[in-house]
Length: 255
Length: 103
Image (cartoon, rainbow over all chains, first blue to last red; front, side, top):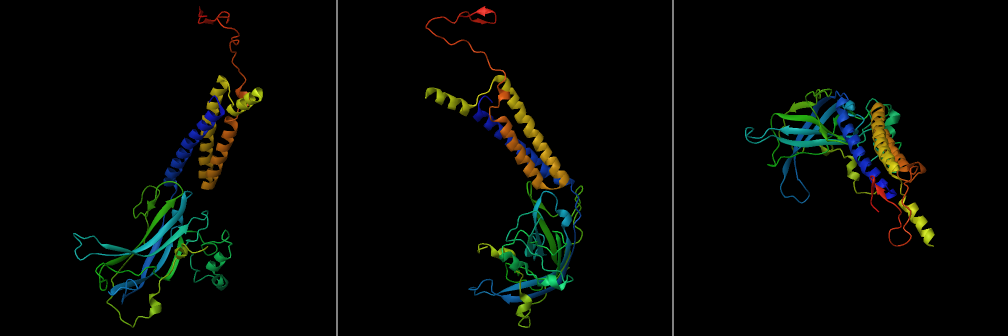
């Protein structure tokens, strides 16, 4: 500590120790914040049609298009150390030989939901306006607002809502799913399941929990059983097979 | 010129006396620990991690400001050095260490 340079080095060195200790305390402190997520997930409609996995493919595979109704309140999952949560819905179905081959699991929909104090990002999931919201709110187009550059004032949620409250009726999937065998029609005992990852500001990534740990209650609801229907032909309209496109498609394009 | 360079080097090195060094060390550990604790507590109570960040960084900046420059309160106990040697040989006078003559 005898000269300026040594003192600067010592202060900085101890600062790194303190910063690490505070970060560790923050990471651990989240076990004190109570959470009680609830969700209701139901199958709305599922259709299986033939299609090409990509444009130049000569092989046609069966694709399932799963529509769902989701009414979830994950707002209690957000605490002071939550940066964003990644919410996703999987469709899983058992294999032909469940004793030796694990079930298949495919993501049909996902969303990045930032905490209210997280800076705006172009990949932010923008909640579609509520069906029971006032008509004037419906006319507001958040995507257009983003282009005007007033992003700081933009909220990803309808006015008055909290991050983590998701209400999707006849929710469109983001991804149509297929199987490695190319056959997905008429599979039985499939399940839709809601999952999420909590991404903290500092600390560990936390997955969704079905069981209760301390003050963290397990998710209530969030599962739905269904069977894949038989293959449908040209009677399925193309509009019925649309997928929702997330804001992440902006990736790489000019802001 | 020589005197000017000497002065510049003194300012750059910013040396402090032994009591000052102990004080600087106490201040370093004390202030940074205190600010870290306050930062966590305020952020946790307000449930706002930005407050933790800003108090932590602000406290660190303040600690740098207090500890790093050679403030006068670090130099209040200057050491009395022996008189400089002027000729060759042993004209130190008498040097006594622990009651024994060594020079």
